[in-house]
Amino acid sequence: MTSFLDIKDLSKKDLERIIDDSIEIKKNGSDKILNNKNVLMIFEKPSLRTRISFEVCINDLGGNSLILNSNEFKFGERESIHDSTKVLDRYIDFIIIRSFEHSILKEVASNFSKPIINALTNHSHPCQVIADLVTFKEKFGNFKNKKVSWFGDFNNVTQSWLEAAAILDINFSIACPSVVSESKNTIKLLKNQNNKLIISENINDIAKNSDCIMTDTWVSMGDQKDKSVDHFKPFQVNSDLMLLANKNAIFMHCLPAYRGMEVTDEVIDSRSSVVFDQAENRVHAQKSIIKYCCKS
Image 1 (cartoon, rainbow, N blue to C red):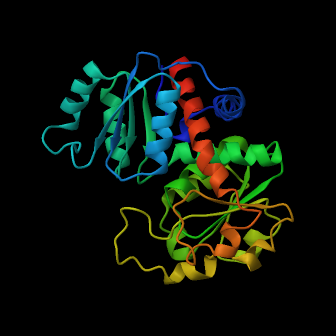
Image 2: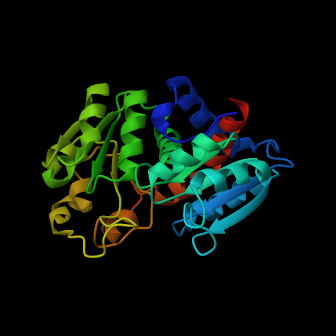
C-alpha cells in the first residue's frame, strides 16, 4: 500500500492508470475495496467539494468515514505531530488530509504506516488535477499535441498541473504577472523537466490555439485578506480571450469561482465550460486514487 501525496511522485504508467481507472469506475462502478476499513478525514481548511466527494467515495467503496475539523483538532497544538500520528496509526486504516501547510502532510506521512491522501495543501492539490485530467481525456480522448493554458495566479492547482504536464508531456502554458512567476522557484525546475512549458505576460500568445483555458481564484483560502488583485485583472478569462482559443476549446475552473473577477459569467455558463464535469469527476478520480493506494 502507498500514499498519494503529489503527482510528481507518480510514474507515467501509474498516472495514466489512475486516469483510465477513473473513467472506468465512472462507467461501471467499483468494488468495495474499503470494506471494514476506517478512513479518517482531517480538515484544517473548510471544504465543500473535497469533503462531500470523499465522503461519497468512502461510502460507495464500503468504508467507514470519520471527520476531524479545525474546531476539534489541529496538528501540533496539544501534542507533537509525531505523537498524534502514532496514535492514529493504531486506530485508522487511511488518512485524508486537507491542510494549510504541506510540511504537516509530509510529517504525518513519515509517521503513519498506512496510506495518506493529499486532499489539498498550500503547495499542491493533486486530487483536483486528477479530476481535471479525467475531464480533459473525456472531452478529447488523449493529451497528444494538446495545449492547456493557465491564467492568473500561480497556486497549488497550478503546481500540480505543472507536475502532471511534465509527466504526460502536455503543452502547458502559464499567463501570469511577472511579480508572481518570478517568485516561484519551482517553475524553473519544472520548466527544465518539461521543455514545452511556456510562461508569459502576453495573454494573447498564451490563449492562441489553446484546447483548454484554465483559471482559479486570485485570492486563495489562507492568503492574506488584503492581498492586492489589481495585477491579475488583465488575466481575466472572458469571451474575448476564449475567442483566441481553438473552436472546440473547453474552460476549466476547480471552483469556487468569483464571477466577474477571474472569470466572467458569460464564460463559466457557456457551452465550453466543463466546471461541473470537473466537480463530478472528483468522486470518480478519488475512488481511483484510493484504488491505486490499496493495490500499489
